[in-house]
Image (cartoon, rainbow, N blue to C red; front, top):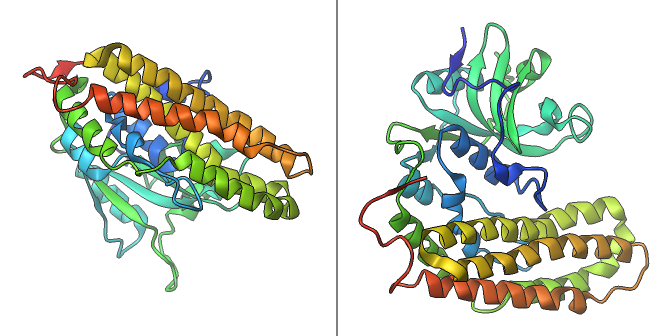
Length: 336
């Protein structure tokens, strides 16, 4: 018997424009991508919740992995997220949680995810996170949000993810319970909350420019990367360059949202600068890939204009969402 919270069909599901083919970075990271599609499937605008992209940083080794914070999901959408204690077979938990009207996010080995065909499906082991919305233990089918869409896996893949009798040394995956009982009405966004979250995340910005610190680390890492080869470079680039670029592109989408709800041209100008950072990181990745093959590269020259765009764009947003005259001051929520 199938337990299905959202009633989606993988053949007719249409993903959110944030995952459109025209995007610079079609995917961001698994934790953020599943929420983009999950919120979209629930009838909400995931762009309104992207304030967290304004408070990210380079931590000295990688661009900080970013996603929708539980407190933001609660305030803006009415979604509650807590860790789920997995003490019995995961499939049993999932069946119960979905029957209660909850969704479940958990870590899996992408080896068993057919949507990763030609990347990791049956050819490479990699940890990733999915959002479970449907399970049918009898037909051995599982419906999940992952990366840019909604998918259904079955049979051997199902058995691998949900072993009915796990061995004694089975390590349960990190699992989150996503409760929807307090979910806000679809397409209803309180712009006062959006603006307040934007101010809060902008207040968490580092005191200096993270792109300049990343440039210094890139200079330091290049000789080591050249020795390790292109496969190591791509793994390194995902955590640094790609996360920075994807973060900037999502921040640009959020800035455009603010421009439509009170920020005006300041929001548009910030979006344009952030889009330059997103596109620039793609160029940086290509240039550094060549550098690992022995070609000379001007790291400072690549990063300097992007660092300026980053800082100026966030400064603009800090001005337009400041405590006086910022967007989202109307007393009533605004339908989107």
